[in-house]
Amino acid sequence: MDKWFESKLSQLGKLDYYKKPEKYRGLKLDANENLALKKDFIKKIAIKAAEREDLREYPLQQVDDFYLQLSKYTKIDKKYLAIGNGSDQIIDLILSVFGKEKRVTTFTPTFSYFIDRCLLYSLKVDKIPLLQDNSIDNKKFIQSAKKSEIIYICSPNNPTGNQFDKELLIELIKNFDDKLIIIDEAYVEFASYSFCSETIQSQNIILLRTLSKAFGLAGARLGYCIANEDFAHTFKTIIQYPYAINNISLNIGSEILKNSKYIEKTIKIIKKERKRILDSLKEINNEIKVFQTESNFIFFQIPDMNKYEHILTQLKKDNIAVKTIGKIKDRKGGHIRVTIGTKMMNNKFLRSLDKVI
Image (cartoon, rainbow, N blue to C red; front, side, top):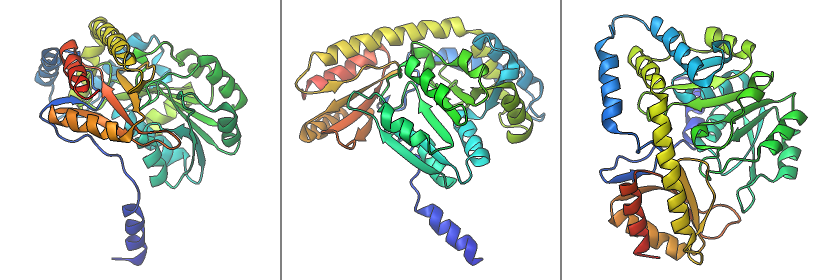
């Protein structure tokens, strides 16, 4: 084995990496999946998609069909769209092609996978801490962005759940038309607004989307981006793999996009439950601090670290998996992110919490 290879392997081994949720037999509220979507609904679509496929053949017509349905759903011409094996893969390709020896400005906490991939490709990352209410520190963010070539904004943000003020982001974009601006809208179906119209009119914005969240297809690995025509064409023809997504996933994606009205009903259920959970948690003012969310999950802070550990112990005892964010710099206690599920699931979570608060 050559020394340069050994050295590189050793270097990579020291990097942080994205931690996947653990396999869990209990109530799984740790991965922001759409649990309000009926399992049988997805199962029927998947079986139908598999039955009509010949897996000996490469995906060709399936790609065209998916673009057609995606265009209908987004109401955007397919010339502004590009698809990937999950939005994670699109992030990976963007950074590997455009990120070499570049600097990125983002904030923290945010989507950890993006940060990890930046480090993998040796990008310098400037992480500006969000303010105590999870809003952006405009002055510090702008100062950092002036020195960077790439800006990453996850909105609604994961793990905090909030969607940033649209006028603020518009102003930010106007000031940095010489930067590559990546806006991650993985949770946009649960939010108040989208940057679609601004994106297709811009030459430097890439908008990331996924079918993993609202559409309940986390296991199918389907993502897409919205961008100017030049980028979308280059991504499809040069940057993306020739056959990045398998036939069955493409067919499942096309079929579920045809059923977007049904998906919208589950989103309304999640939004209703979101309000109910937030209202319930806000009543416990002295024990926890719950933040406003525009996503399919809630994010809250337990200022007392002993109480935080006590809550995690109780949730584990009741077989409920949540995302433990832990300590955030310059903030007291620990933080937890919890997926909003069905009413029954959410009640189980609230009852467990009630035992220790």
